[in-house]
Length: 213
Image 1: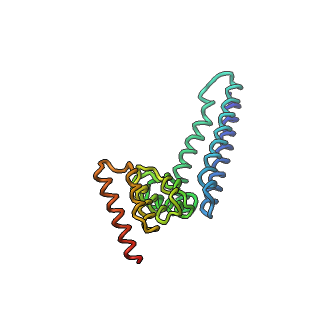
Image 2 (image 1 turned 45 degrees about the horizontal axis):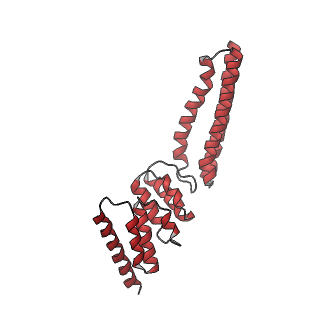
Image 3 (image 1 turned 90 degrees about the horizontal axis):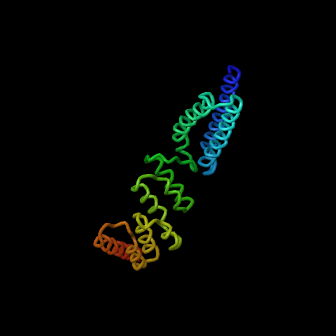
């Protein structure tokens, strides 16, 4: 029993060290300009590999002891505690990176995802922002100078960014008729609010036309 216990603790320690080293290397890679896959997907893949190793250790212990004991769960408990603490800490350590924004709802994180979405011209990155205000702001900023109408259709109709996008297209093309698409928005609670937004959009487009002319 004592041999099994030492063997279990030793393997758990080795697995924990591998996880620590992999997480540290990944954080450094992100801090020095890693991409979205390195900073967001790699930690999840590492976690899956470690989890697989832990389950293997559990299986071997149970097989050796011929029964399920608390000792078999020791690797899971230790790795779980280390994993949780590492993920909590690593969330802040890569928040400043270009492609490694975390999902914490702070102004820094909202700006990180917004800038990344603008640069890549991809609305999907806005979805990592938890607050509705930050999400709408991200959609609106990415759609500020849309290349075509399809960009607006990628925005959920329940977000203000959907209206912002068509308003910006109207300004960009000098055509107030694009504002009529706001009628398909589900953002407003009352029809009167929707009509008011459409009229406001057309006024802004026309005002922008007079300035540009």
